[in-house]
Amino acid sequence: MHAYNGGARLLLCSFKLKTFYCSLIAFVVLSCIIFFQWHYVSYFLRPVWDTPPPPFHYLVHYYSPNLSIPELCSLHGWRKRHQPRRVFDAIIFNHELDLLEIRWRELDSVVSKFLIVESNTTFTGLPKPLFFAANRHRFRFADLGGRIIYRFFPGRKLRKQESPFEIESKQRRTMSKLLAESGIHEGDLVIMSDTDEIPSAHTIRLLQWCDDIPPVLHLQMSNYLYSFEFYVDKESWRAAAAVYRRGSTYYNHGRKADTILPDAGWHCSFCFRHIRDFVHKMRGYSHADRVKDPSLLKHARIQEVICNGDDIFGMLPEEYTFKKLVAKLGAVSRSYSAVNLPGHLLKNPHRFRYLLPGNCFRELS
Ligand SMILES: *[C@@H]1O[C@H](CO)[C@@H](O)[C@H](O)[C@H]1NC(C)=O
Ligand SMILES: *[C@@H]1O[C@H](CO)[C@@H](O)[C@H](O)[C@H]1NC(C)=O
Image 1 (cartoon, rainbow, N blue to C red):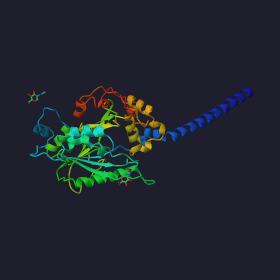
Image 2: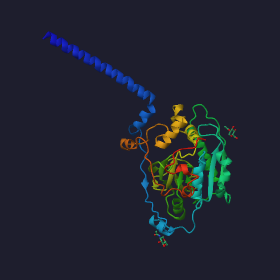
Image 3: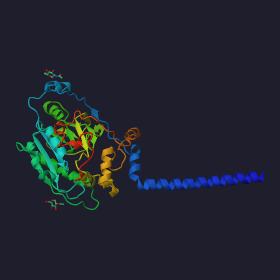
Image 4: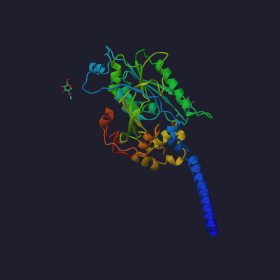
């Protein structure tokens, strides 16, 4: 009896000891993971700590190449105008020359003025060449009739504690001023989007030719990563078109309205020709804090990530529900479709090869 009791006690004790050690080890391991991979953990828990933006009101977007303007306006419940609105395309330019060419060619037939602000530093304050100014000859087609309005933004190093977002918002204020000075009138249409958020010409033509459109309308675009080979989803929403009102139309890249027009263009993120452009972008933009580890910038790693459709920062998708987050875990799957891509891209398949499916290898320099 005694012996049995003693044995049981010993067993119990070692069991407790094991639990204790196991818990301790688990605790230490978990703390390490949380400490070193905090961005990972916080992204994973985003559905818990972050609330999604309020939902959009979706218009139905009708389009077929064979429909006339009166038919298109009428399908949307709008009236056709006697005169098209003038269109002002406004972008803050970094270094995406190829995408800029594809964008401006796409919008060539609908845009009255191309407004462009360019700085000699990135949002993070690193010096950068004036890529547009140095390559302006590539854009003679857009310059016809003096359509390009260019403004240099003098950059500088970030002050201590200053966030790149502050420089970004200064550049956006510069664009608002440039707009006001560009000869724009009330009722003209302004496209506000980044260079890599390209509205389709037919979408802008619709907004230009129809009355009664919402005064501010977000343009929903298909998200692509690295090239049109990796289709992510159709939920890019930051681009917008606004009917210009003096004193109330300001240039920004955030949520401006509740109404959104689906399938209005293409958003190609990190769609660059050279590996060095990836490095430039990773170090230069407002989320540069994501570059935690310099090995992220190694060329071989970047090339591998591009061909796999993996996340360039090694991060988790930004999602607000676990369901969507889990659905998007891992690499983006490869697409074999080059249907309904920007016309200028498909007309120059050799020059822009790297943007088409099946060509993930990038030039080094
Ligand atoms: C497009 O419209 C033209 C002229 O209205 C017509 O001849 C042609 O058959 C149409 N094409 C399609 C595919 O519907
Ligand atoms: C950017 O331009 C401004 C104004 O010309 C100049 O003062 C500044 O030194 C330049 N910065 C860099 C990094 O070239």
